[in-house]
Every structure is written in structure tokens, then in C-alpha cells.
Amino acid sequence: MREHTILRIVTKIIIAPILIFALYVQFHGDYSPGGGFQAGVVFAAAIILYALIFGLAEARRAVPPGFLRVTAALGVLIFAGTGVATLLQGGNFLDYDYLAHDPIHGQHYGLIIVEFGVGVTVTSVITSIFYVFAGRGRRGDGA
Image (cartoon, rainbow, N blue to C red; front, side, top):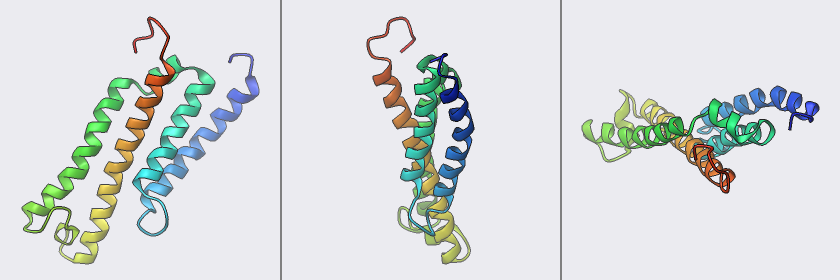
């Protein structure tokens, strides 16, 4: 891909806006369509675009598979931890009313936290799946 200078430059320019859009979808999901799953897919798409243009080895250096394993587990822990926190407060699992002094604030906080956990997990899992399938048939690349 070294000879495709325009593709490399355009990719460097558009990856940051893609990531910013993913964050917008992530944190605006409780007010409009979007949320953790959609943001996770958009975020993973930016990483996959980087891998397609700059190479799988370069993408693995930028976002290592070990980091993806940790963040996938962390996202699930954030989701489940929110549910456990509501249980400890005296509510049902994922009953967001108990997360704040006011049920409306609790609902808002709960949605943001749970959707963040979902987004982190989806990004990590989709990127990991891409790494596995893109690395098939290659020897000695650390897959």
C-alpha cells in the first residue's frame, strides 16, 4: 500500500472525524438513535480502515490484541458492575433509579454507563474478529 499515497493521506484525515462521530453516537444515544452498539461498530470500522490501508501489522501495533482482550472484559464488567451496583443499593438488577438521589438522574447515569460498557465491548470484539480473519494464512505474525 505504500504506493497509494492519496489513500494513506485521506485515511489519516478522516480517521479522527470517524472516531469523534463514534463518540457522538455513544454519548448521544439516550437522546436520539444510537448508543453503545452503534458507536462500537463505527469505532471498530475506523480501526479496520486503518488496518486495510496501513497493514494489519501496523494496526496491531496501534491497537494490540492483548489490549482488545482486556477492554472486551472491561466493557462486560462495566455493564455487569452497573447491575450489581443497583442491587447493592436495594433495587433490581439494572434498575437505574437507584444510581442517584433522583430516579431521573439515575436513569440518565445508568444509560450512559451501560452504553459505554457495550460500546467498549463491541469495539473490542469486532476488531478482534477482524484481526483473526485478516491474519488467517499468515505465518509468523503473532496471531
